[in-house]
Image (cartoon, rainbow, N blue to C red; front, side):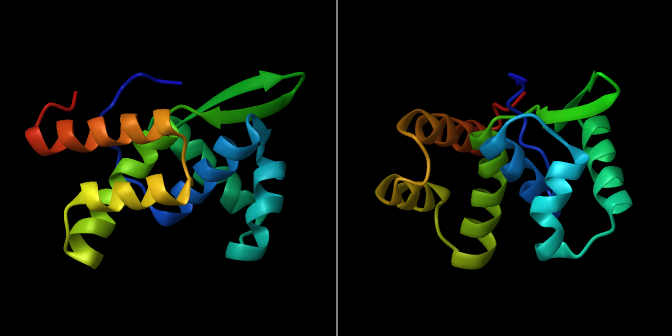
Amino acid sequence: MSDNHELPELSKAEYDILRVLWKNGRQSVREVHDVLQTTYGWAYTTTKTMMDRMVVKGLLNRDNFHGVFLYNAEISRPVGLARMVEFFADRVLEMDAGAVVSLFARSKAISPAEIKELEKLLTDNREGNVE
């Protein structure tokens, strides 16, 4: 995974694709498509186009494995979460992002190491220290 901590702009669909890959590891378009099909109702080609664009954006990595492209997340889960947490805290809850992060800690939704990374990313972004 990339060590670049710049907070990427993510659509909900991009975040959902990343979520599948964070949970399941390296997967083909078909595998990701099958997980998201009921949520989005996309054609297979839409999922493939989205994932290929995410490769160009630096969100995913793609490897050819015996003629099948396999994708994995190029950004860590905390990096992906940081942008969503900022948006949710600022625009929906109108509160500090740190308070939202504390909700993750209580719910055990992410690991202590991920919480620490998420807190650092949010602090660095607020202070303008993101790469």
